[in-house]
Image (cartoon, rainbow, N blue to C red; front, side):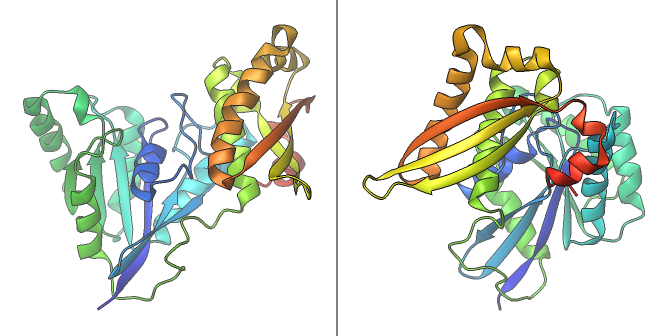
Length: 294
């Protein structure tokens, strides 16, 4: 009997949703950053074994939106709850349940879909604390299973996959076994570049950044792929910060991104980056749509 189905991973920003998915899939499909609101789109990642297939939806973290883009991100997260065979709610090792987690739990109470809770970052707490954390969430009485995990080092990931397999219904293999995401190459490349901007830049600037892939061309005479991309930001002052003194910051972003893109494409890459200003694009409906967020 072959089993298959769709699993969404929801939770506050920055609890490790993308990290655990990348660990399971074995490739960097979703970008990782220590800054919240890193994931903006609903990304399908595919995990296939000989007798089952899981289609994961990596969604933006549920948060209180400050602009139109934020509203779209929250809407995207909530929309997945009624589309899946299993909801995974992910929290971290905080010893108290904050208001946003309580809000998410309240949203889950009225949904009949099976639910699994993952408590992430257990590598940073004592064993006695893990038991206390599990008991704290058991009181809500809405989870089919509660699994403490470490997304960064893979602790109990196998247990999580086995739990999913038990819950999944009988079904077809939706995607070829060698397919790991439904996202096109261009999107993954743009996200890899955006990940590096998140790493290199300060708190507020990264959320106002969008990366557009202008062209990807393979040279005829050499095994080199030319990638041309534009980093859009919201303010002229941000443009200067992205470029940095003597262009050093942009060079660092480009060099770091190129390494990941070469790994993705399996070829030498010539990456050329430009920076442009698009004022307050996150609050402009037409720009949000133009940049592909709706």
